[in-house]
Image 1 (cartoon, rainbow, N blue to C red):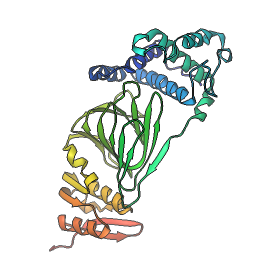
Image 2: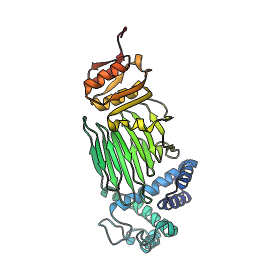
Image 3: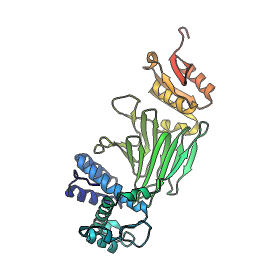
Image 4: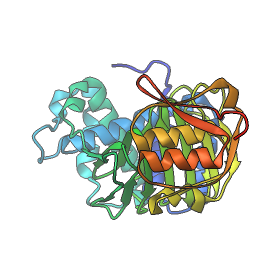
Length: 343
């Protein structure tokens, strides 16, 4: 496993940023880091390499050359060119010096980890795959994580969470989850939802991924949303910001919203303020548990109003009372069509 497109200079810069952010509680520094990521695609690639390999090795159980962990790599297992780095790492384990007071040895430590994992990529297969949480079609589910963070799963949702010693992550498989993340200087939290990655400071935000649609809304704090196709250009979202991508759309949409409205599902309400009908269909699909499509003749409709979460009959009646549409049974699901003239 090699990375010929990443220069040594870029790796060095990435290592310095990685070390600096371990002890950073300053939003201005994080914004400067995002600026650096956006300035050159190679920066994002180098940082992803350093961060990912460090986390992977740490989760395998030890640092290179340490005396603990069943999966350690001894210095003698590496080519002589890397031996000095492993010795340097042994002399400066993270437990003996805070990273922000020892940038040079910490950078050497990360470099050693990168070298070790490039030579022994099988280490990744030894990692814990995390814990998966699911909610059913009738209930939301609240999860308290060991790090002090909390998750609230909307109905029919699934997420896998990994809480490691130096990093925390979650993968939203499907559905909708409200996150309240406890800030920790030395353990970033990254949420993956399909092709999206959401880097989090201590914050409260909501993520939806369903049937090709995606949405992030921030209630408190700051997040950076990127795609696997363009990781060097993350979109920063502050409190009240929302990024949405409708299924089949060619571009994302950024807007300022009422975050309280977007979180209202936790209290059994769905609040819409000039939202497209496809958003309603997506919510109905999640709550009823079957696909809900929108007929072309009503796709342009927008909705302002409140639905109270209930059973299928209740939701269908509310939608038909609120909008000039009818909910029709079709093979495999439901379809929103134009109501009969004269209604």
